[in-house]
Length: 169
Image (cartoon, rainbow, N blue to C red; front, top):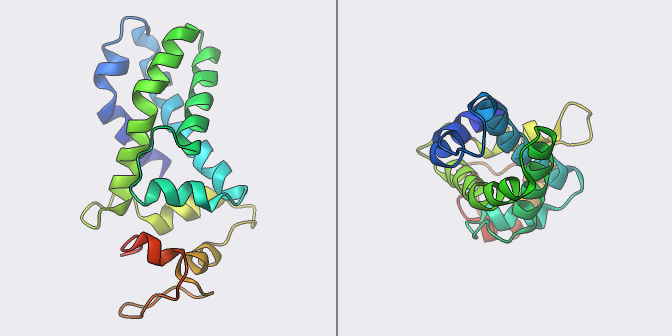
């Protein structure tokens, strides 16, 4: 998933990063990695802390700008850029201009049944890590109101899934 996220970021930040005179050309790739890493780390943090509400907000097609996820990812991104020696004002401006849009693009691709670059089950699985603390079937159960993943044609179980119609299709 992180590889696909890096590619999505690379495709969407040409003007903001690569053509930005405030970012040295030799740091373009590091900035791209920082953006995708910040989004990934934030999503992973939201899952591990059980903040499913913040995730359902963005995966439900709500605007990413101003959400807890976008704010945390922007803060992470600014910190990473600071570590690269990028001016604080440039970092803040760049975070505000690209992170919400990248999150929106990511969730759009995840929700698009015709786009196989991101599958919500794979995304949730990769966010859980290998530490055994996160089980995709448990989260799927939270979404559909039961402990089992829905089979095609089954009615919703009254869980969060009813609010996220089509998310797992």
